[in-house]
Length: 213
Image (tube, rainbow, N blue to C red; front, side, top):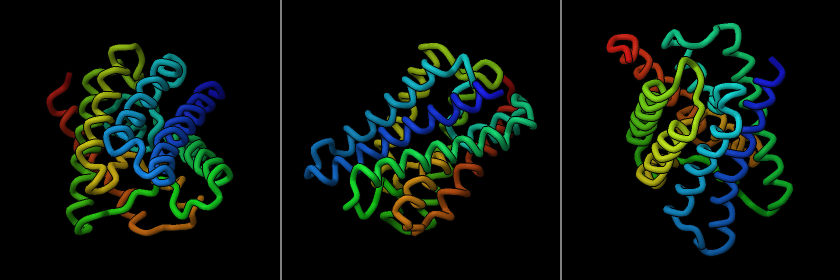
């Protein structure tokens, strides 16, 4: 159990640290990475963490993904809350470290809507749905592991981040949004990012149970 939870903490930590850190660096250094570079960092971070920890914990790194696996009937209900707690803890720890490194940063890769709230909310539902569909149809049970799965999921994260980054921030992950919000004490639009991913993965799990693999 401890190894699984530590893997979820560590994987989420590095995804948030590298991903949101790339946003902070992009802001501090006049757009050096751009939206394409930020999307690549997120996609690679997810892929690498899946390769490293997939065989240990299943490499969820996302409270919505753990919940989606449970709804799809592919994850032990007794592990859902512990996984979610350590994923949130990893994200918050990563954001607090970024705050220590960049004390003058007003935001730390926070997810905000740059359009009407309802459009951003709908976008988050769609991209979380697509992410969970890809995960459910490429993983084995509740386990995301292997280079091929890592590549496919990483590409999906990249595409979603590049497409929706300028619309909603492309969170797809409540932990990824909560960490920067707490570290910067800026909770603007946070409720949307805590809810939309769960709705998206719920729709994906429903589809999976209806169609099967």
